[in-house]
Amino acid sequence: MSANLIPLLWESTLQTLYMVFMATVLGTVIGAPLGIFLATSRRGELLSAPVANTVLGLIVNAARSTPFIILVVAIIPLTRLIAGTSIGTTAAIVPLTIAAAPFIARLIETAIREVDAGLIEAARAMGATPGQIVRKVLVPEAMPGIILGLTLAVVSLIGYSAMVGAVGGEGLGDLGIRYGYQRFMPEVMLAVVIILIVLVQAVQSLGEWIAARFDKRAPRNRGR
Image (cartoon, rainbow, N blue to C red; front, side):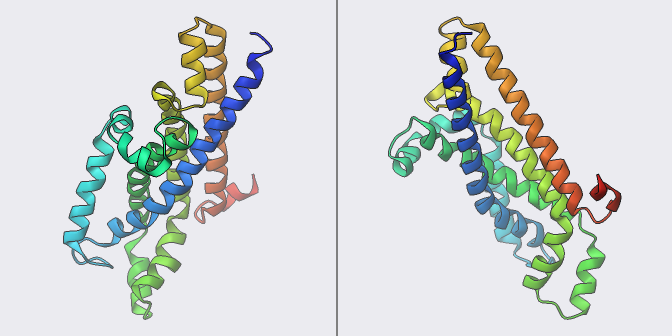
């Protein structure tokens, strides 16, 4: 591989990290409260609002059911409205965030639903308000599951960020398509794949390590 391509690989890796980081942050800001609400708003639950729960659940399911590459194309007008353009790294953050938010919401909902219902009843018996129960019981107890869910979301976003390279997004996917596929340079494609594998492995290992630190049920893991 030409030495001239190494700076391109570095630049593309930074662009991918930027897209994934921003989409994870924005997706969590949108998805976290949505996931908490979905986990606590069914009929008879802590924040009972069954109609809103059903409507939001349908919206989340619809967003998650749309294939990512179709979503990217379908929301091009919205991407232009928000980012001022439909190509480039910043523009790619819009579809990545829209794909990440409902995914993160469902992951957080699942993590919270795994919290022992007895803890909620105990908190209620002690006079805690719904907001206090969410902040001081549900979220802390579900934190290991939430961290593992966010880890899964980041890994998925790394794959999605490579996909946006096919429609004008920058990053490793764009580099692999332009040089590895269109210019018949398999060594570039191989380098892109290896970097993506390393990124996924690093994120997975870091996520599992952080989750173990928050897991009260496995104190032995904190000593590793």
